Length: 167
Image (cartoon, rainbow, N blue to C red; front, side, top):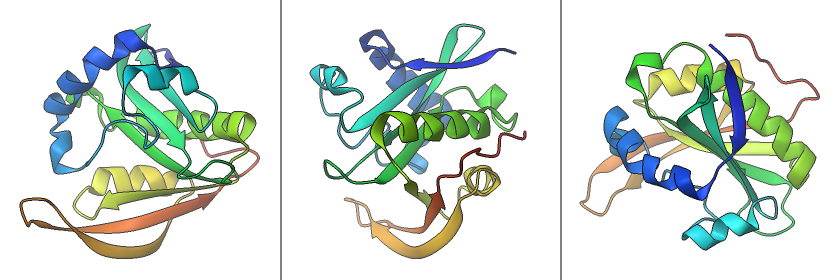
């Protein structure tokens, strides 16, 4: 299995909905794109305030991983990831993709710390984040538009020179 991250392209946008449905992302994620992305033209801003990669296995895109900033110049990045194939979850692909994306965010964006939020019920993701150096730094509850309360953890990681890549 050959895992490679490549720059997310316009053609990959059509994969977001099928990936989301395949893994029930609506149960775990509010958004399956970077914060700084809202329309296809925003892909031209890649490398300014976000990096977004397609996760490929044997040259087939199976997900995406991104790091972006809330404000220009921030050295704190926000991490997001979606893997759209349930049959390959739990095989270390997310962990390896996160490590590579964080290293690239350091190089391209100058990020030195990364934060994410993860629903407490998403135990598989929490394990993956911990194995890549994230620690719980807070918790809270988000309220969805329909009134549903979702408990979450905030997790953070300082960028290490060499991030863990063990699977």
